[in-house]
Length: 283
Image (cartoon, rainbow, N blue to C red; front, side):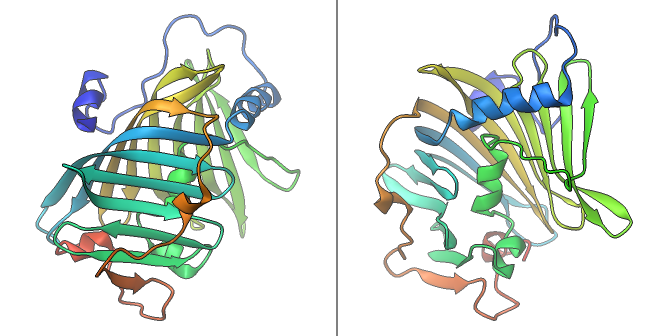
């Protein structure tokens, strides 16, 4: 369902981000763009939504095989650090990922009943291709905080402002997060995330916005997670709310019945990723 909706949106393939055409108005300064974005981002502190979820993961190392899952579920987000996304098929839950301030986890049931987990900020979180923290940042709802010590680059393209937040890596300046803002609305239309070495780890395209109360909320995402293999995630939100109370219990780490637990910070350097569990994939 999610993939079909994106096809209808004209979003086939991970190509250039689609942005609004037409007049773009006077050129804004970087400070004006950041202030406009931050005012919008600060207006969204939580999201409750139903979600159509499309997940494509590698299966079979080196054979080019993939496993595709199309599911219905929910997305729950509470800033600054709580996220939960799950999907079910015919009423049976088959996928869920989440995090709180201390722990992250991912559970996939088809063929293997395994939950991968680890500490927030630990080594396992960065080695994990489907990091909930990366997903949360890629949703685009976080403000930009530039300090005098934070290098950044700003570019005005014909239909988008592009802001690249950087870090200093010795004599080099390496990208950390790159955001494309639509020049008409200042809403983010693409977010790229990079690791500490400047390698891109996530590309997220924010394809459509809807008015939820007085707030614009992105309701169609296409994301690609990069590692030794690539994982695609499509989210199409419906019935989104930014004012609905989300119970704290939603974000509690719970091991599903009979699930095998893989602790990515448990001292086992050979722990498998979800792709590897399907017969191949990135560690």
